Image (tube, rainbow, N blue to C red; front, side, top):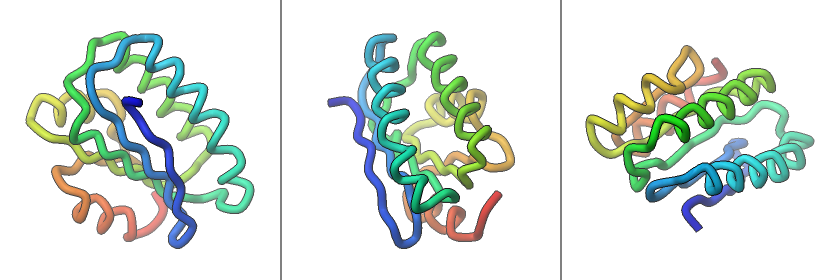
Length: 123
């Protein structure tokens, strides 16, 4: 599976891992799985941070990145909290920054920096 969706309760954290090169079918499956999994977690943790490990996620095609932009907009609408993305490499950083970075989402090169930023509080 090129992704995983996990939850931690203390502190409330949605942990995503993305790997490989995706097509529209993979993106659609990820979106479905995310929409199924997150509502149950949000019942007990309406505000939570999200940590995405995309260090094994290759630079993606434009249509896949556009899909991630739509997924990010849903997260903004839910006012879930801060989101940190860990990437590997300059091109991946540029792509993630262009696609989803805003006041509540930042890109990092390692998990420790990402977690430190998430712990600073809600966006």
